[in-house]
Image (cartoon, rainbow over all chains, first blue to last red):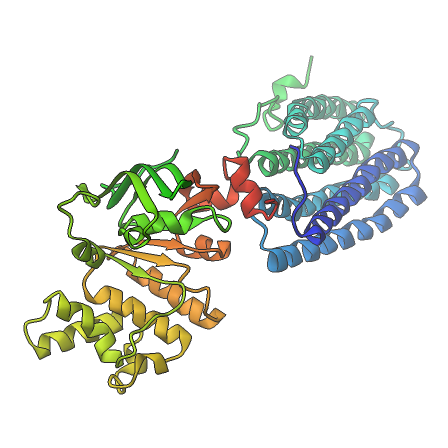
Length: 237
Length: 258
């Protein structure tokens, strides 16, 4: 949506800074997802510890976004699309902070599977790649105020859910084959669940971006495979 | 154009244009004003919002070069009809101006003047009742009840404006037009007027012209945005300020105008 600048130029600068901070935060969360998965695949406990440490920076950016947004609301009294954008920035920051926590949680599980024989499934890195891209594209859409791009992000959540269900089944098979696999498989299952939640959160961000850009709420999301309805019958082929 | 109202409109304007000599100040404006809602007119200087407000009680009659076309009705009655008594009309459609303009008379006389000339009180006791009720409704009674004989012009700016509102209320109007009633007041006095507008809502149809968009957002339920003599957008205040449909409205309320 092309926007001419505000009569008060400083207001434009403040909005630009707010948007840039949200994008910076999103970039860190996206990197955390990618690096956590790499640490998991390589069983790199030192790399994983670094990711946990880096999460503090994401938390600090959330606080900064909140401070900037509150300041704009108090001093500029934003209206219409400006108001929607500031509110979206505030909400997105909270969601991205959660995304960072999920990535951190994946990293924290690396030491627990270090000695196990079970290999991270090939599906897990691919799932992480898609979830990371959703985060990336949702934040891109926010930066560009691009409603169509935000909508496209939402479309991909079903794929992430499908990955989760496949991984769930595969890990259960590992557990049934050898009870020694149960601990590491459970950790990997939590990692997959974290990625599934990241996909949901990226979808939420996309919906906020869509509303900020258009003033209209996206209606019900397209429903992929339900991740809670895998029964015993599905497990044995 | 969103003109939905839950009940019959108090005033309706249809195809209204206003000319000052050759110059067209208002171009083909149609709008409905209800009693249930406070209606705010916003727009940049010279957009015609005050001119349009003044057509609603024929204040433009006092401007020699002004000419009004179109149809304006109060409860279905054509206010520009030759049968319309303009003095009576202005009692039914009262007005409060930008600068408080109390008469150089006592506080009591400021409020009593209208009811007296319109013959609304049979005796002194009735007049006293009207004065007290009007000052109470205007939120001024507690501050002036012990000094009703003092001059209205001795009050503070905010009190003077509330006195003018009391004066408008005293003749029991149906509609109150307010033309930037707070622009000469400090924030506290402004807040008192805004609270008063909130109190009066429902009893009278209120139309307020304001340059202060925050004020429009705070006090009104319906907002009309005027630009270059046109009514650009009219709708629920919350929608106008969070998600206006017209680009011109958005540019104005977000500070991108010009």
